[in-house]
Image (cartoon, rainbow, N blue to C red; front, side, top):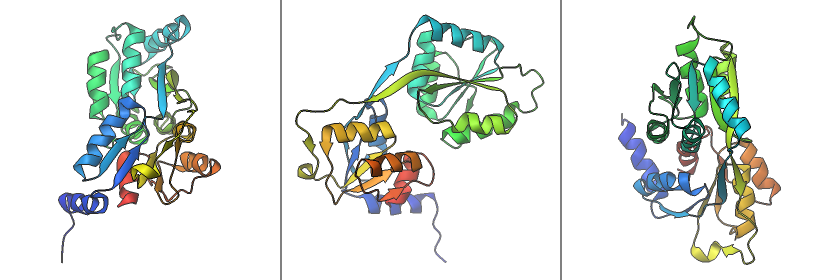
Length: 258
């Protein structure tokens, strides 16, 4: 019987994506990582950032972050932008008693550069996976205070990490440190059909709005959504969603494309 291991799965994905022009609509900071992964699988990524990232920086959020971490034992970072924002707002000085949990290696590198440490990196590179793994670590920690974990998020961003933590009885404070906004409406929209775009990856409702503001999507392009909220936004914008990822990540999107 033939076996399909990690390398066999990679080969199947590569065959399915080989030569396909894939539009990556994430903000530039995130799009480059996705483009690198797609290139490894033989696709031809076209980076078209449809979002603008903006850090929320005022005295109120700075004070809220300092106050929350004074009582917390963990800071959860689910994105590189959140890691960078936390470092700026803290002035690079993370309280010595606070440990840092991150969603994956890219966020880990950002966290080390911005707050100086990483104590837990999720084996499953997703917000929900990180929350579940961290819950196992802190559940029996008798030193947990009333504000046990601080989650650094984005306005309107995913909340799987805090859902998993709260389900395990862990006290969570979420603070939104940045926001994403769609790129503005273009006077002349980009004609993606003329560029041979075959697949469009959409990872948020904001990305849907930005895409529709600036481009015309060919009717025969496969539209891949990262989850149900994004699918709903895409359909509301008049796009036909070809597939929806079963898990909210690039790998989940690649799985339904293959």
